[in-house]
Length: 94
Image (cartoon, rainbow, N blue to C red; front, side, top):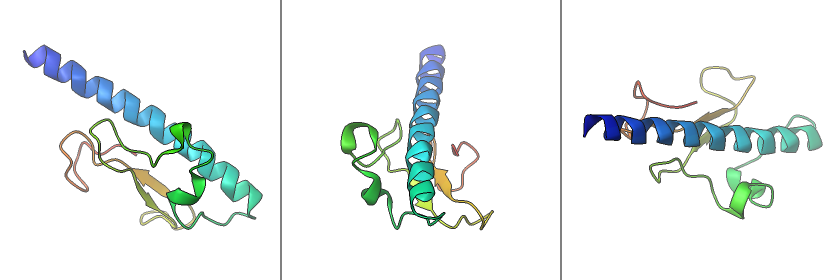
């Protein structure tokens, strides 16, 4: 039973990392087309995002987008709160 739960969690982490990589490509393309300016929100990227829907992690929660970033103000941040859903938790995915 524990092995199955762990594997589902690992699969979710892999899926969420792949999703964040796709969203990063869309954000980077937007920034390249807009002189390095951040998109005001992920909604403006909908035409470029896979499935044209707002990104949600493997657990159904929205991906957090912050630009400029909290930790590095010269970049942006995309964050999933991870399997436990706790903001800033140790299992977050960036």
